[in-house]
Image 1 (cartoon, helix red, strand yellow):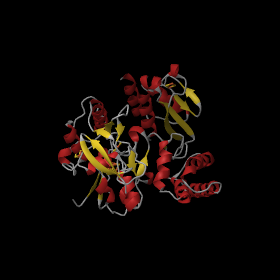
Image 2 (tube, rainbow over the protein chains, first blue to last red; image 1 turned 90 degrees about the vertical axis):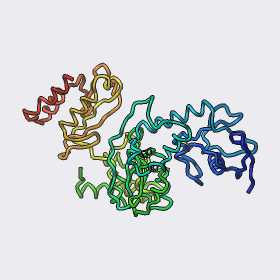
Image 3 (cartoon, rainbow over the protein chains, first blue to last red; image 1 turned 120 degrees about the horizontal axis):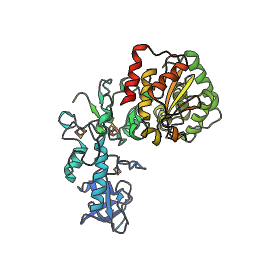
Image 4 (cartoon, each protein chain N blue to C red; image 1 turned 45 degrees about the vertical axis):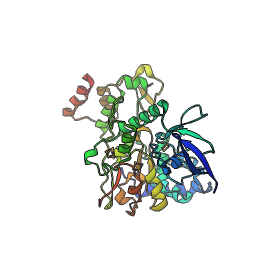
Length: 213
Length: 176
Ligand code: SF4
Ligand code: SF4
Ligand code: FES
Ligand code: FES
């Protein structure tokens, strides 16, 4: 396999040709915020809009999860434009998120908390109005607990459920009403979910969590 | 809202007929759902399951598409279809209050049908009569400048009687 050499934040790193920039950076210990990226997926959804970077010679920031590495590429993970974009996307995500870290099963292992720490964002909505979705926790499965109020719609669980589970998870509706759910919105316990728990292992936040923990 | 066994049987049968005209694969999903809706007037879950099986895709993906587009309705239409305009003008004129009145009086939420199948409730985008806002369209007939009392009046014209004690409720909303 051919490798290419590129520069990220002044550091010279090697990456497999054709690999997406996000993974090249992460593998080399350079953090770029991301929620919706899934290693090995051919067509990234690029839905979370958190992985913006600047690439020399590009007119505007691009999403690192969709950008293949190229020999000699010069990347910077931070710039005023990037920071602005990422902060806005982050704040939008928080604006309908049931923020309740103290009693959240993912407190301290949550990707939102990590992004906030890395980029020095506060975990508070400052410029936007908070719009809470009044969604019920689904406690029907013996192994999985689903709190849609914390879902960031990254799609990782939908992918994992198809790859390794029974494929019962999917997206429904659109806009503010968009939600990860099952066919006909039946509770997980009656959906054909076999309790493999793969979705809880990929969920970056406290939306899908295992019950045993 | 529950379908009768007869309705389910018809849904499955008609869907199977429609599917015969299509090859497998995701690409045909929307045209299939459109034909099902044209035939049955709605897309019940029995039909969605048939479609998923035929196309070889997860049932939740059919549900995903059917709930994404406003053109698909998942429940049978009521005998009278009530459409509350939520366009910009109607929104400004308190369309949501009118919608709440309908919901409360009918005891159903948006996109539902009353258990007796008399009324179904929907929210729609601008119906083009903004000067009459807030607007409710019932069975293609446009009703303008709707107030909570007018909601009761319209229901009355369909033979629905609002119990005396409850009438205040609507009026209280109107004064807000
Ligand atoms: S998902 Fe993360 S940010 Fe949200 S409440 Fe849980 S720990 Fe906090
Ligand atoms: S439940 Fe978790 S993994 Fe699934 S879309 Fe929501 S945040 Fe992502
Ligand atoms: S990780 Fe790139 S857009 Fe979500
Ligand atoms: S907004 Fe309701 S008719 Fe135009």
